Length: 166
Image (cartoon, rainbow, N blue to C red; front, top):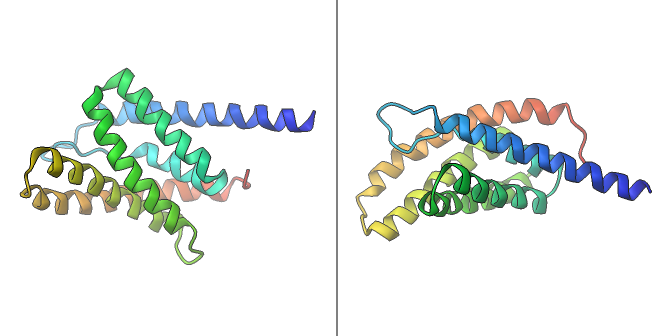
């Protein structure tokens, strides 16, 4: 009985986290960053960081995949899903590796995640478009990713401190 209750609570929590990620993703899609096309704040990254630190890797991976698919079907297109997947896979892989270090805070992990997300997306664009000149834009996006990762990391760290590991 207790196991069933815990599983039910976990499914409910995952549903809430996914809903929050979708809402944050939608909100940030409506907040254009002037002068920098394609730049987003990465608000849902904070939720992913929460899942990584307080749940487990499979849960964080599932949330990322579901967010990409549902956001793509609801607000985007196959192309946006492809770029989101490239950024998400590179970002989450890096955050998983870095989060295992006791010396790095969730803020540092989030900053690396923001940077790596942009590396994944621009790397895919360079492959598809055969445009090495995108490296210049990648450098700009990497800096922006670190700043946005700092903001989401600070928010996630504040929330993570107040929750027990699940």
